[in-house]
Amino acid sequence: MPPAQALSSPAAARREPDHPARYAPNAVALHWSMAVLIVVVGVLGLLHDSWPKQTQAFWINLHALIGLLVFSLLLARIAWRRRHPPPQLPAECGALARRLSQPVHVVLYVLMFVIPLLGIVTFIWHGRVFDFGLLRIDPGVPKNRAVFQPTELIHGYLAYALFALAGVHALAALWHQYVRRDGVLQRMWPRAREP
Ligand code: HEM
Ligand code: HEM
Image (cartoon, rainbow, N blue to C red; front, side, top):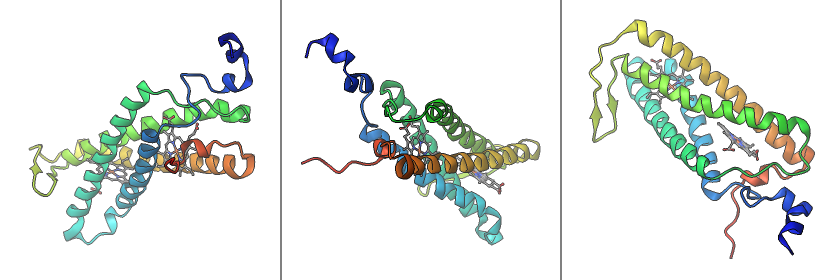
C-alpha cells in the first residue's frame, strides 16, 4: 500500500507507528507489580496502629522498605514511559473516557511519587533507622514532632486519595471490559507468550 494511502486507512489512523496497539510487556509488568505492592504497602500502613507495641517498629520498617521498592519501580516506570509512548485509546472509546483517562493517570503518577517522599520524611524525622536485614541505614536525624506529625498526616490522607482514585480507575477498566467491551483492559493485560 502506498504510504499516503496507508496513513489514510482507518486501521492506520488507529495505530500510528509511534503509538502501538497495546502497552509493552515492561509497562504491563510494572503496572501490575506496582498495583499489587501498593495494595500490600497500603494495608500494612492501615494496620500500623493495630500491631502490638513491641512489634510496631518491625512492621513500620517493612512498610517503608516495600514503599521504597514501589518508589524505585515508579522511577523505572517513568523513565520507560518517557521513551515509549502509550497506545492510543481504541476508536470505540467514548468522549468521557478520552477526556478523563489522561488526567486520571497523571494524578495517579503524582500520588505514587509524592506519597513515598512524604513517607521517607516521616520515617527519618521520626528518628527511625532503615533496616534492610544485612544493612542498616541510620540517617542520624533526631526525632522532630514538628516535621513528622504534619508529613505523616498528609502521607496518610494522600494514600487514602490514591486508594480511592485507583479504585475508581479499576472500576472504569472493568466497565470498559464488561459493559463497553472496547478492549481497553486487554491493552494492559499480560499476553500469553506467542509460540
Ligand atoms: C505508595 C507507597 C505508600 C503507601 C500507599 C503508604 C501508605 C501509608 C498509610 C495508609 C499509612 C497510615 C496512615 C494513617 O494511619 O492515617 C502510612 C503510614 C506511614 N508510612 Fe507509608 N505508604 C507508602 C510509602 C511509604 C514509604 C516509602 C515510607 C518510608 C520510607 C513510609 C513510611 C510511613 C510511616 C513512617 C508511616 C507512619 C507510621 C506510624 O508511625 O504510625 N510509607 N503509609
Ligand atoms: C494501585 C492500583 C493501580 C494504580 C496505581 C494504577 C495506575 C495506572 C496508571 C498510572 C496507568 C497509566 C499507564 C500509562 O499510560 O503510563 C494505568 C493504566 C491502566 N490501568 Fe491501572 N492502576 C492500578 C490498578 C488497576 C486495576 C486493578 C486495573 C483493572 C481492573 C487497572 C487497569 C488499567 C488499564 C486497563 C490501564 C490502561 C488504560 C489505557 O489504556 O488508557 N489498573 N494504571
